[in-house]
Amino acid sequence: MKRLSVHFLKITVLFSLCFLLALHPAAASETAVVTFVSNHEQERSVKAMIDSIRIFSGPYNSCKVYVVTTDPLELPCTSLEKDVHTEVMSLEMDSAYRSYPLALKAFAAAQVEKKVKGTVDTLVWLDPGVLVLQPFSDLDLGKNMDVSVRPVTLANRIGISPESTPDEYWGPIYAKLGLDYKKLLPMMTIADQVPIQPYYNCEIFSFKPQSGLAQEWMKVLKFFLDDKPYQESVCTSFLRKLFLHQAVLSAVISSKFTPERIRSLPLYSGYPFSQHDQLSAEQKASSFDELKTVIFDTTWSQSPGWMKKIPIGSSLKSRLFDIYLRYLEIAPRVYRLEGSCNSYLVITDEGSVLIDPAGSAAAPAFFHKLLETH
Image (tube, rainbow, N blue to C red):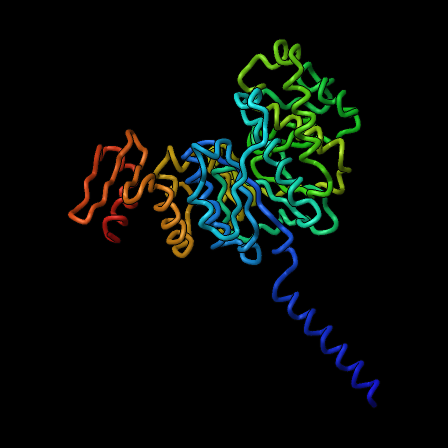
């Protein structure tokens, strides 16, 4: 009888543990986010991103967010550190690479990958300008996937057709990684629907830190940044410089993982808002409410009427409205809205002052809301 009681106690404890794990999924504590800040506008964008994670991401709402800043003196990101689950780190990258467009992404990802390896199962990369509107379960890799990513939105004269021998841009990258283009599975760009060899968007993707993906990305990118003949004879256009980090990442993914270990992100997880008009009728989101993660790029800073572009439910609209108002605050009680010109709303205890009101005409509701609440 005593032995039965002990067994019953063990079963009860085990059941209780399983119940607690069901209430608090392990994925939430084993998934982290990494992003970067290289200017003050991006700091405000990242703050909006963090707000969206805390509000909308469900079981991931307390996940760790690592923010890599390019300049801890000029950009200490103190506004971000107010979030207890956010850690700001200084970028570890040779100054010689600082001027190269977006090379910092590989170095920032590698830096955080090294820090969390062994403690985090999935590392989610989100560019500044990304918002989370639902739990990002498509980015949670679990046991069966190594990376979650989608094809680029546009070929941009960088992507090459499946049957083409890699050109002077891709050829050396393939050679460095031992890739045979004939064995690579083709894919289709999102907006212009062009068949290409593997070429992935890296504004939103996820990977397992233990795979060493980011370390390899940084290592190979650094090799080509240091290759003077390659830089001088191949990277001769702005686009080739701008997308080198993305081309290298794409090749690294193809070299490290078999196709069945690569999850293809659906369009609602990484929706390209700035290319919304270029998408087909079947691809276009019918409502913000159906989207999980959205790539806004510079939309928030340049298009104040962005909320009118896609229908949005009242509950989500109200919450996004508040996040956007916090984004518009460039200093305590000073708000800037960019339209045909920059409009500034300065709120004081004695009253409010609107400077250059023409810019606010594109979306006056935002300033109206601020005046109502102060």
